[in-house]
Image (cartoon, rainbow, N blue to C red; front, side):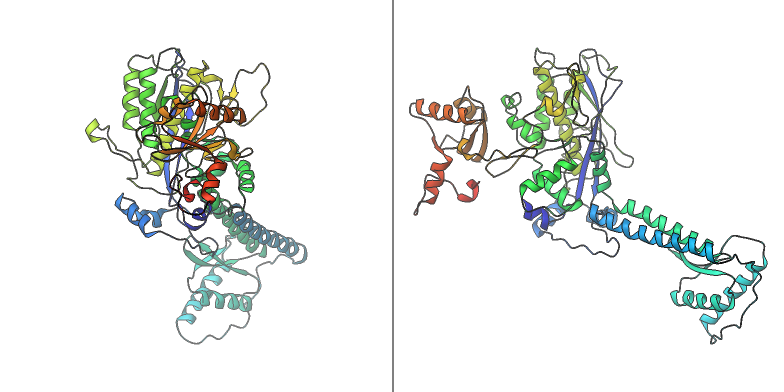
Length: 560
């Protein structure tokens, strides 16, 4: 994961801001959500002369091209960025120049008397006939006319040629000692500026440096959006997002540290509340019984359908309605299954009229943009549905929809209203405060991110990783037709985590040492089991034996 984030460059970032409408909750506990998704092309612009290099994989380029990725728009319109250290270095350099100009301005005001503007011309510099002399003569005439006028405004003479500007500075110093000159830029055009006081020169230089400082704000680029999420202490949400988070950190903040512990500490300084919808779906005790699909699109459609069929039942999910607020120039629509499910529920519900809090649930999708830039502009029929999954902004939208439905399921089963869930920053609540933060409502889910093809299969960003392999058991040889629920029933009433290896093998992870002992007892009590179970130590012992290992799997898949 770390090597990939250091080698390859994200080409697009998708973010979706999700907020509860404060005026449109319904009497039956429903909540109205407004989603604002967007995608940003990311391209390494040269900032302050620094040239960036990155690697690409030919297969990835072909895959992006086959799925409609616009490489021209990526290069032409992609936003650059500055890491915090780069931004600080740039600002420090500009500020030092500002301080120096201010010092010179103060020294000049204290030591040099103001010019009365009546100094006469000195001996003119002899310049050979040619284009340069014609330019100098024209500039001389403009300066004399300007000096004869009563204006106090500076004289600006368009002059693109750098040698001619340098020549004019020498001419002005020799022939017009009572005035001051300075080269300036307006947009893409160069000027020779002439002033009647030295203070005006310094003011012009200060103005140019202030504009340079404002340019740095623009060069921060994509990171400025992520900085707003940090400043607002809003939760950051993704789906199967550990690799995405590594890319975000490596690209926009700093080189990834050598250890996972250093990364977790640095990440929590930026985003103290993180959620992974894939981990929620597979590990939360109130969601795992739904047997949801693993893919983002499948999970989005599944959660929408589950909400529409069980809404209104005791302990069922809390009602939700959705609205997509697209930015100018693009248009996103709700996934078809979500829009259809919402329409079937909305006909029997009153119009929302109230609400309370605000949440921003960005979903990072920085590794690729695969489909069209926007979702369909008209509502499709079932046969016309367009699949925009994997387009970064659309994936962020689906992630937001999934999280809202997951929270609706959890809150419904716990008999908690939407108003009691607080999406704000981490805080210490008073005993009489009924609101619960995300960390309080989801204590075993916040800051836990699913890992793929690794053991342990989850990283805890805010605490000690669950790397105790004594709670990991290799379950192998079961029928390939067994689904997740079949595997979970074997170990009932224990609640266990599953990490698949292939169609007939998976790791079974007990929650604690007591459950690990109970799991082994259950296996011993099964008569003629249809599978084999071994501890991690037993598996490693078999792996370390010389010769063939027919009863084990590849070390690459199973190494912790």
